[in-house]
Image: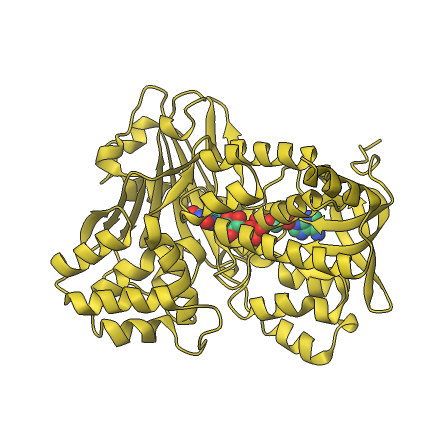
Length: 494
Ligand SMILES: Cc1cc2nc3c(=O)[nH]c(=O)nc-3n(C[C@H](O)[C@H](O)[C@H](O)COP(=O)(O)OP(=O)(O)OC[C@H]3O[C@@H](n4cnc5c(N)ncnc54)[C@H](O)[C@@H]3O)c2cc1C
């Protein structure tokens, strides 16, 4: 008999959270802390969504999306998770760029970028300050019609080198392009520039383990290997969810649902378009998915050491003469971002040096390849990456003991994101995501949409916003569970 992963779940919860990406995990934690009974469903056998890792023989642990995030993670983790989690966040030692236009090292702060733009790129100081002030002053309610390209043209006309410096890292951080709204660039760029780039010491596995412990402490029922298949409604409101727990089907009643699944999957697969207004469905259909990624994972032999002072933590490398979205997405790879992981990444584990090369990619370029061609293309990806890496890590082929690649198909397989989208949907997805509860009472979406709300920090913060909205809705509906009230009264008495 296959194991029934929901056999210990109750038949009713205040809130069901579909998906354990950082937005889903955070929403579940906050709602449980607020006294709600919460069921967290995850279709994969591991929690974390894109915030994930995998192990290989020899003690190698590869992180998928732990390359860098803004300082804001410290505050969000302390407030919505625990001090212990926040205390593991550390700054990266060095970020590097190497392309035909320039090579430089930076701390990736406003101070250092200002200095480099003035001294190395010869831009007038007033212009640099004005650009940073404008980016910093941007907020979500600003004009959304100006594109990032237009923003750059206003401050740095004709300066392709400056645009590359300012844009390339953000494209890697959230898949945004020069054609996206300038506000989505400005907000994310300013977040990074406040203090630099940060990482989680101990690795993604440690973070997710600590989050799981916190969720269990706060009373969340966690069910892995559970695919949410259908959201049932009654009189325009959420009534229950149907879950396939590896063969066993369950229906769980609930007052609210937070879907951390892909926005389009939520609307079209889990609910069904006939349950929404026509105008809403038109908007939902127009939501574009973000691009996907390929990665190559390389483990150095046990006695091989890489030096952070020589390589840095993050290297944005490119052989393309200019920064162009087309070139970034092409199968003919010219741009790679290397993350170098040293023993300091997992100080408690076995000392290991690892390299992950990441590249933006299109799902269509990989989706329909016949199996043999697909495997050959993955092998080619590994080989060309090793060739490209040779100039930074001499004799790399002799020094690595494990090399493998992932593609947009891999990301789709593990996270059920349509087209393996690494960063959910494009900007227009945010308005659709926000409008869900007006269409169906009790149905919310939290997860990568619209650039600002994606990436580790964006996803987590979106989970916070949505959890508070769900709590308000439940409070207004007067359905606060007795257990929740008791818990709150008890904590007030502390
Ligand atoms: C290669 C790569 C590199 C990245 N690098 C960085 C980086 O350096 N810094 C950064 O900040 N961000 C990075 N990101 C992005 C970041 O990892 C994501 O934006 C973020 O983790 C997404 O979180 P999320 O909450 O939107 O959910 P997701 O991670 O998308 O998770 C959604 C979850 O829902 C589950 N699910 C889906 N459908 C169902 C269903 N029907 N039933 C049950 N469960 C379901 C999935 O299995 C998954 O666990 C990177 C992403 C990729 C792919």
